[in-house]
Length: 296
Image 1 (tube, rainbow, N blue to C red):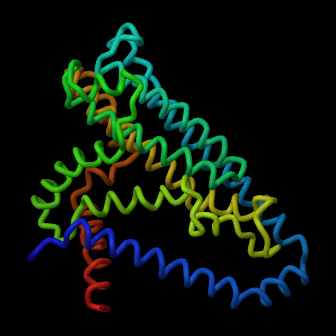
Image 2 (cartoon, rainbow, N blue to C red; image 1 turned 135 degrees about the vertical axis):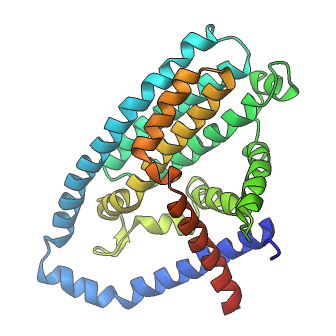
């Protein structure tokens, strides 16, 4: 079966977003009177929901902090490998990027705890850029034009990093017999996060408080999305850091540290090693794109 191209997958995801946005707005409009009556019957509902979400957020964020505390020693250890952090090598670049990601994750967890969902996702998107750059740099030599460009203070676009990752993703997709482009899927996910940094209407709609039917100044919606979506994003972010640490320690030939971070991934994200779960994920995504094609 012919594989759906990157452009086809990206187009499919854009159409999904547009349809989802329209359905979401229509739902808010249709339920306005019902929600208004609901709040009038008990004005404490919004604050009680916020308090309940806040309490659960503290529990979930603490769990993530506990996992992160196991990861951080492997980031701090890189300093003993790179030596001078002003040295202009691919390993130094990786160390600095891991440092940015660690600070970013601390900020994400703090923001989520306080219901600042939108702001947390903005940082998460920036972290993804940093994580994409690390494997790119590790495949370069210290005197490569790309490394020299970065240390000269110039920007290495995320598109460059994605293109390098896309080559590996394409190979993975072909081996797995997938009929959709993994490159397009990755690009679509990144595009979704970009909606927050580019202040799109789709992203800002997360700041709509259905109870007050106003902008979410009290972060009622913020706490809801932080708990129901943000925590999951942050958890996946930690998994991505662990995977990237595996790439780093494999590059430097540190088998002990590689085994250590591999053990962390097996402990906190066992589905990555579950072949049955992997096949189900692929089947679900296949169905998602195939269904759209049938509907069209």
